[in-house]
Length: 190
Ligand SMILES: [Zn+2]
Ligand SMILES: [Zn+2]
Image 1 (tube, rainbow, N blue to C red):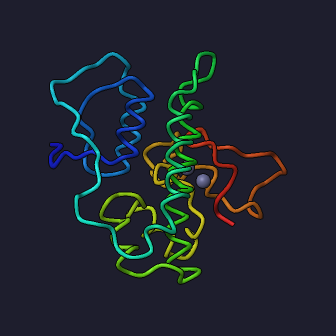
Image 2: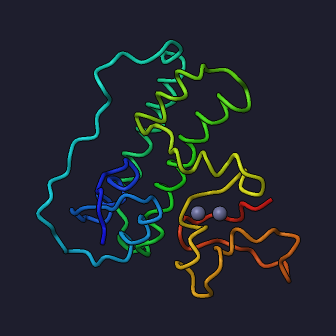
Protein backbone atom coordinates (compact mmCIF):
# COMPACT_ATOMS: atom_id res chain seq x y z
CA UNK A 1 0.00 0.00 0.00
CA UNK A 2 2.85 2.33 0.66
CA UNK A 3 5.24 2.68 -2.16
CA UNK A 4 7.80 4.99 -3.70
CA UNK A 5 9.74 5.43 -0.52
CA UNK A 6 12.07 8.27 -0.23
CA UNK A 7 13.62 10.30 2.49
CA UNK A 8 13.12 13.97 2.81
CA UNK A 9 15.55 15.82 5.00
CA UNK A 10 12.87 16.66 7.53
CA UNK A 11 11.82 13.06 7.79
CA UNK A 12 15.37 11.89 8.28
CA UNK A 13 15.87 14.43 11.03
CA UNK A 14 12.62 13.60 12.76
CA UNK A 15 13.58 9.96 12.73
CA UNK A 16 16.98 10.73 14.14
CA UNK A 17 15.43 12.69 16.95
CA UNK A 18 13.08 9.86 17.72
CA UNK A 19 15.86 7.30 17.46
CA UNK A 20 14.11 5.48 14.74
CA UNK A 21 15.50 3.88 11.68
CA UNK A 22 13.05 2.89 9.04
CA UNK A 23 11.44 3.79 5.77
CA UNK A 24 9.39 6.90 5.52
CA UNK A 25 6.72 7.15 2.98
CA UNK A 26 6.58 9.49 0.11
CA UNK A 27 4.00 12.03 1.16
CA UNK A 28 5.18 14.76 3.54
CA UNK A 29 2.09 14.43 5.64
CA UNK A 30 3.34 10.96 6.50
CA UNK A 31 5.68 12.73 8.86
CA UNK A 32 2.78 12.36 11.24
CA UNK A 33 3.09 8.61 11.03
CA UNK A 34 6.65 8.74 12.27
CA UNK A 35 5.59 10.40 15.44
CA UNK A 36 3.19 7.67 16.31
CA UNK A 37 5.45 4.77 15.35
CA UNK A 38 6.67 3.35 18.63
CA UNK A 39 10.32 3.83 19.35
CA UNK A 40 12.37 0.73 18.98
CA UNK A 41 10.93 -0.54 15.75
CA UNK A 42 13.72 -1.15 13.34
CA UNK A 43 13.47 -2.10 9.75
CA UNK A 44 15.89 -3.50 7.31
CA UNK A 45 16.09 -0.47 5.05
CA UNK A 46 19.28 1.47 5.28
CA UNK A 47 19.21 5.19 5.31
CA UNK A 48 20.63 6.80 2.19
CA UNK A 49 22.90 9.74 2.72
CA UNK A 50 21.38 13.13 2.13
CA UNK A 51 23.83 14.97 0.01
CA UNK A 52 23.90 17.69 -2.53
CA UNK A 53 24.44 16.78 -6.14
CA UNK A 54 27.89 17.23 -7.52
CA UNK A 55 26.63 19.80 -10.01
CA UNK A 56 27.85 23.25 -8.95
CA UNK A 57 25.06 25.42 -7.54
CA UNK A 58 23.71 28.34 -9.60
CA UNK A 59 24.96 31.87 -9.25
CA UNK A 60 23.96 33.59 -6.03
CA UNK A 61 24.53 30.49 -3.93
CA UNK A 62 27.39 32.21 -2.10
CA UNK A 63 24.97 34.78 -0.80
CA UNK A 64 22.51 32.34 0.71
CA UNK A 65 24.94 29.65 1.84
CA UNK A 66 25.99 31.28 5.16
CA UNK A 67 22.38 31.61 6.32
CA UNK A 68 21.59 28.06 5.28
CA UNK A 69 24.64 26.80 7.11
CA UNK A 70 23.62 28.72 10.19
CA UNK A 71 20.17 27.13 10.07
CA UNK A 72 21.71 23.69 9.52
CA UNK A 73 23.89 24.26 12.55
CA UNK A 74 20.87 25.19 14.64
CA UNK A 75 19.14 22.10 13.34
CA UNK A 76 22.02 19.90 14.45
CA UNK A 77 21.94 21.57 17.86
CA UNK A 78 18.20 21.03 18.11
CA UNK A 79 18.68 17.37 17.23
CA UNK A 80 21.38 16.93 19.82
CA UNK A 81 19.44 18.79 22.49
CA UNK A 82 18.63 16.33 25.27
CA UNK A 83 14.91 15.96 25.48
CA UNK A 84 14.46 13.98 28.64
CA UNK A 85 11.64 15.39 30.62
CA UNK A 86 10.07 16.92 27.55
CA UNK A 87 7.09 15.40 25.91
CA UNK A 88 8.13 13.60 22.75
CA UNK A 89 6.14 15.98 20.58
CA UNK A 90 7.76 19.00 22.15
CA UNK A 91 11.21 17.74 21.28
CA UNK A 92 10.18 18.01 17.64
CA UNK A 93 8.94 21.59 17.76
CA UNK A 94 12.31 23.26 17.18
CA UNK A 95 12.91 20.90 14.26
CA UNK A 96 9.64 21.89 12.61
CA UNK A 97 10.40 25.53 13.28
CA UNK A 98 13.83 25.40 11.69
CA UNK A 99 12.50 23.45 8.75
CA UNK A 100 9.92 26.18 8.29
CA UNK A 101 12.54 28.92 8.64
CA UNK A 102 14.79 27.42 6.02
CA UNK A 103 12.04 27.04 3.45
CA UNK A 104 10.75 30.48 4.35
CA UNK A 105 14.15 32.04 3.81
CA UNK A 106 14.32 30.70 0.25
CA UNK A 107 10.65 31.47 -0.42
CA UNK A 108 10.91 35.09 0.69
CA UNK A 109 14.09 35.67 -1.28
CA UNK A 110 12.44 34.47 -4.44
CA UNK A 111 8.78 35.42 -4.18
CA UNK A 112 8.82 38.44 -1.89
CA UNK A 113 12.12 40.12 -2.54
CA UNK A 114 12.99 38.82 -5.99
CA UNK A 115 16.54 38.60 -4.73
CA UNK A 116 17.48 35.20 -6.13
CA UNK A 117 17.16 33.75 -9.61
CA UNK A 118 14.64 31.12 -10.62
CA UNK A 119 17.60 28.83 -11.27
CA UNK A 120 18.75 29.16 -7.70
CA UNK A 121 15.23 28.79 -6.32
CA UNK A 122 14.67 25.64 -8.38
CA UNK A 123 18.01 24.31 -7.24
CA UNK A 124 17.00 24.76 -3.59
CA UNK A 125 13.76 22.91 -4.23
CA UNK A 126 15.50 20.13 -6.12
CA UNK A 127 18.11 19.71 -3.41
CA UNK A 128 15.33 19.75 -0.79
CA UNK A 129 16.80 22.78 0.92
CA UNK A 130 13.34 24.34 0.69
CA UNK A 131 10.30 22.13 1.15
CA UNK A 132 8.45 22.07 -2.14
CA UNK A 133 5.11 21.10 -0.61
CA UNK A 134 5.23 23.75 2.06
CA UNK A 135 6.23 26.42 -0.43
CA UNK A 136 3.34 25.37 -2.68
CA UNK A 137 0.93 25.97 0.20
CA UNK A 138 2.33 29.42 0.96
CA UNK A 139 1.30 30.53 -2.50
CA UNK A 140 -2.33 29.83 -1.66
CA UNK A 141 -4.61 32.34 -0.03
CA UNK A 142 -5.13 31.61 3.64
CA UNK A 143 -1.98 29.50 3.80
CA UNK A 144 0.57 32.28 3.41
CA UNK A 145 2.05 31.61 6.82
CA UNK A 146 1.29 27.93 7.25
CA UNK A 147 3.60 26.49 9.90
CA UNK A 148 3.89 22.94 8.69
CA UNK A 149 2.10 20.36 6.61
CA UNK A 150 0.99 18.30 9.57
CA UNK A 151 -1.29 21.03 10.82
CA UNK A 152 -3.48 20.76 7.74
CA UNK A 153 -3.81 17.01 8.06
CA UNK A 154 -7.37 16.60 9.20
CA UNK A 155 -6.99 12.96 10.16
CA UNK A 156 -4.31 13.95 12.63
CA UNK A 157 -6.63 15.74 15.00
CA UNK A 158 -9.29 14.46 17.31
CA UNK A 159 -12.02 16.37 15.56
CA UNK A 160 -11.29 15.58 11.93
CA UNK A 161 -10.51 19.22 11.29
CA UNK A 162 -7.41 21.26 10.70
CA UNK A 163 -5.16 21.97 13.62
CA UNK A 164 -6.28 24.60 16.13
CA UNK A 165 -3.42 26.81 14.91
CA UNK A 166 -5.26 27.19 11.59
CA UNK A 167 -8.26 28.87 13.19
CA UNK A 168 -8.07 32.65 12.70
CA UNK A 169 -7.67 34.49 15.99
CA UNK A 170 -10.80 36.52 15.22
CA UNK A 171 -12.85 33.34 15.09
CA UNK A 172 -11.68 32.03 18.41
CA UNK A 173 -14.39 32.05 21.04
CA UNK A 174 -12.26 33.37 23.82
CA UNK A 175 -8.86 34.82 24.34
CA UNK A 176 -7.15 31.60 25.22
CA UNK A 177 -3.64 31.10 24.02
CA UNK A 178 -3.42 28.43 21.42
CA UNK A 179 -0.46 26.25 20.67
CA UNK A 180 -0.72 23.22 18.49
CA UNK A 181 0.76 19.95 19.68
CA UNK A 182 2.25 19.05 16.31
CA UNK A 183 4.80 21.75 15.83
CA UNK A 184 4.19 24.21 18.65
CA UNK A 185 2.64 26.78 16.31
CA UNK A 186 0.81 29.60 18.06
CA UNK A 187 -1.46 30.37 15.15
CA UNK A 188 -0.68 30.68 11.46
CA UNK A 189 -4.00 31.53 9.94
CA UNK A 190 -3.75 35.32 10.18
ZN1 LIG B 1 0.21 26.49 12.53
ZN1 LIG C 1 2.37 23.09 12.29
